[in-house]
Amino acid sequence: MSRRDPKYTGSPWEHFAQWRRGEYDPSAGRLETRPPETERRADREAALLRSYVRADRRDEYTLGLAKRIGGFNRIYRALAVVLALFLTVLLLVTVSYLPAFGDISAPENNEVAQRYIEKGLEETGAVNIVAGMILDYRAFDTFGESCVLFVAMCCVLLLLRVDKEADPHSQAVEDMSDRFFEPHHNTILQMAARILTPLSVIFGIYVVLNGHISPGGGFSGGAIIGTGLILYLTAFGFARTGAFMTERLIKTLTVSALTFYCFAKSYSFYTGANHLPSFITPGVPGAILSAGLIVYLNVCVGIVVACTMYTFYTMFRKGGF
Amino acid sequence: MGGSIFTNYEEITAVVLFVIGLMDLLMQSNLVKKIIGLDIMDCAVYLFLAAKGYIAGRAAPIYVDGILDASHYINPIPAGLVLTGIVVSVSVSALLMALTICLYREYHTLDLDEIMILLRRRETEEVRRLTRESGEGGGK
Image (cartoon, rainbow over all chains, first blue to last red; front, top):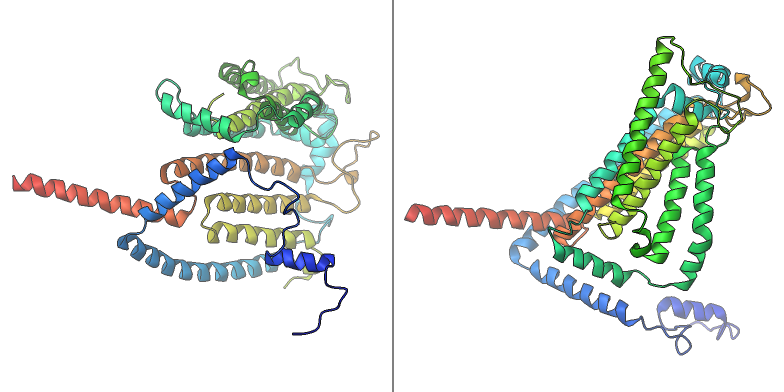
């Protein structure tokens, strides 16, 4: 044994080394480290379930299959590493032939981008060039995006929705697990939610309505509003949010927003393509009600995104509104 | 090798992130980690697109001080593409998570290898049951 420096004994470094080896617990005797009863019960149940599953798998057939899958896994992993190295080298060689970062003469800086920038304000009235691009020139692309979100929401509803009438047992199980694992009447969370929910919802509305004159827009603002609603739900539970965020309201809002988007933009594209007179004008750049349809379309997208975020959260947490 | 490997740090980072995400997707057997790998790959693509839209010394594409000249702003098109990508990635992640929850409810595990074992055993049991039933039917 090498001699220890006398300064080392009892120093924080020694305690740290002991803590790393598991010999010393700084909170022993000072803090209550035992988990609460509910957590311990959940742990016991999970361990019991795991032991059932493990015992279930301990027959010879399964072990043989596991061995075979293990052998396949080794070859698979070796091939994956080879693929990773090959892909890295290939992509790095490709990157080395690309134009330099920030180069003005790169091929993507062509007349399309120039046209959007030079004519954008005159034709769309939007100060934010990206908003003018995605909600005016390429509005059907954004309509497709909103529909992708809507379809994803429908798929999650199909997969995770718990039908109360058809299956009262699983609904009861979901309700119980929700009450079991989520904190209730958490004062810190409720205070924070009381302050932050109105702020984040108002900020989200601001971001949505200013999407055409500043950075932001329907997608980011909708996500902020959805976050505020989720915070409120986490703090106060389903009884409070269920009073206003019902399935019917979400369905009505989402479908009417998408329908309005579709008809408004069809009208604008039809009149624009046929050089017909239209009552949609770019307006005064920088004003809140300018830029033609862009502000209304931003509101539609914001509604769809906020409802989708909220629905994702409720479905993943409990399987119902 | 081309000349710009020492100037394109952003693109190199995007390549490294992409390969990390792909390896996560291929090597992990946990389904949630696979979804995280897919999201890392998405982020690599956004970084690449955003880096390609940048032009040295220019401002973000929002009109300031009434300047309408194209030589004052960066390329706005990659920003629109990244927006599309983020929305699709969120939708795909949510759908994959929902499917993962369904698999967990069925098999009580998130490990893909264990799910494969349980699935094959269930299949062989089904085949055995069917052959037994058909054998009994033929005996009568």
